[in-house]
Image (cartoon, rainbow, N blue to C red):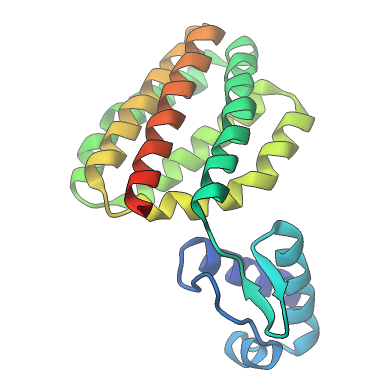
Length: 209
């Protein structure tokens, strides 16, 4: 992996997981020392993070990690509702039932997994769900639009990462979506997606007040 790609991946994960918090100034010299690379790949990585919207220039302070406001969250979810409900409809039409039947089995077991506090394995399951939905929808333009917002959504999702009860509810909601897709019922999948996103948004906004 190229030094710039490694620097980008590391910084992106640190921002999404809140190891680097909003408002943090990102200085090239400090980052190059921390990451063990020269300033050139750090500069390239920062440019990509700016394009992602995770980092921005701020009046004389240089580059800083962008804030996550209530307005940002609400607007992200407005876009997410439109994109993911359509994704669900298309996925139900183009799905391989076996893929979604297997995901249904895994989401059925997710509450027990979360009860043991194994959240990373659950997040991996959600990532595989996203990949399966993208592949089944077979619309590269829609998938590309979603990929631009997913880093922000993952960052927002971490706000509720210590709420096991909410994660268990979300697992049940994902199961409903997966079962609808497996059955080829696009409107049910879209409706279940709407319910899941509405409940997720309400939970996150409640925790930010």
